[in-house]
Image (cartoon, rainbow, N blue to C red; front, side, top):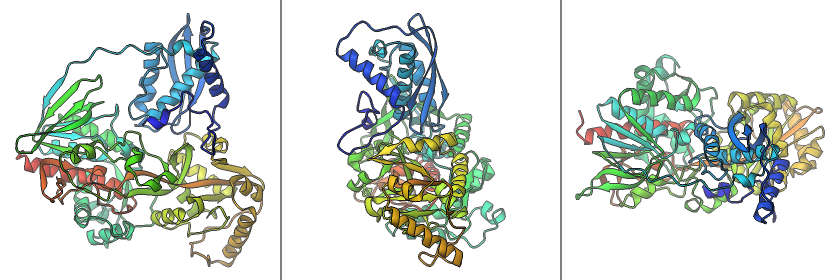
Length: 624
């Protein structure tokens, strides 16, 4: 969204207590100075020298390094040589954005849809390479000529699925396997949506795999539902809870036994489940998406990328019979069908659609989460539910102003294996560090300034680094060290010091309070009991060596509210009556997870709702 690149020099510090980021400061200063000189109308631009030069820019997850080749004043090639961007989300930007800059000899090419921060990081890196070559970036600021309008497209299918994330790809594969002719459209240049950011966990309740491989016999849909209501604070839609808990076992059997998707026990078992039911897919969700797309296209399904649905088409009786969309070159795409499944995701990137309190937290999602499906459906009378609820997690690290990394696995694993602790700005512990994620979130929200910190000795830091690498949080341990250079509102994201008190002071934590807390914590560990919060002990903290303190902010991505649906995922109107031909799956549908989601349930909901919506749509359409 536009907030990602609202200034000509996006890394410039902002006054008045707002965020500043100390990253690639020298390169940015040079670039901004050159462009500022150009704006003042100075002498003719200098041409870059022949050869290969490097540049660095700040991407979504960290630095992006490029090599740029120049010959006779022209930019002839750009290669991305190092980055930490999210696989599956950033692929198109890393490939297409540099190619567009070279093809147009212009830094003014558009950002790649859905990968704005990666695109802007590349823009900054290429600008820095031009400067390093002795060239004037101003000479590469010509606006590319617009392409001629493409011919409009018209296509027919049995079903149209809007959105190729976890719910959409699952719906498309299921519908195609049931004999439907399916077109799957996606506004981004890659499939995946928000699902590409998650670990690919899924609950196995009621499945053959759970009974025979996991040896869990005490789980049930009722027990899973109880867990969902507890974590969701009883704001869940009971109809949808019943759908997901009763249908997930069959879906897991279909995925593992029929489709041979490689699931196994999840690498991190979170504590908010009452039974052994957490699965993980090999290669995380990125691999799930890849495998499912291969199966979909292998059965004859069609994927249309960079195709953004804008309007639902209805017949004279009000039945939804297709969508009008905009293609990659601005062409109108008209798709007609017997039904439409909306799997278009949530609206976490649209700030004015969110509750006001979300401004206190960091967004770790995608700028493509703009509520398109919700807007289309409500424009024809669809009902909504739980629009004030947003899924929040603890343990966010704000690496870009307003945007954070999801460091939950790193923090959770460190707490299980070491004596690291969470404290607030007073230096006080405030929670059992191994509590369920929802408990940790609520506890963090309740702290002063809605912020907490993880305090680690050298042993704990080793565990944190190891899990960060395993979870691909960042590309290298060195990238974690760079957190000390990121400053938000005058406070670093991370501090490293031989002195606990100095570390606390730098981070804005009460030094005496933290010292007293660490002393008290070690005394309780020596006594063999956490008398304050009942944490299961896994060691204390060292009394010497290097200390590291990392911020722990509340983060959000997924919206929990959305369109109202019945048990079979038909979208209903305000009278509770299904809108003929319209179905929903994933985050575009609200209610299933209430005010918070059980770990693995967002992804479980995406996949199960995708399968159920496909089965219903195929049945309603009379497809054999």
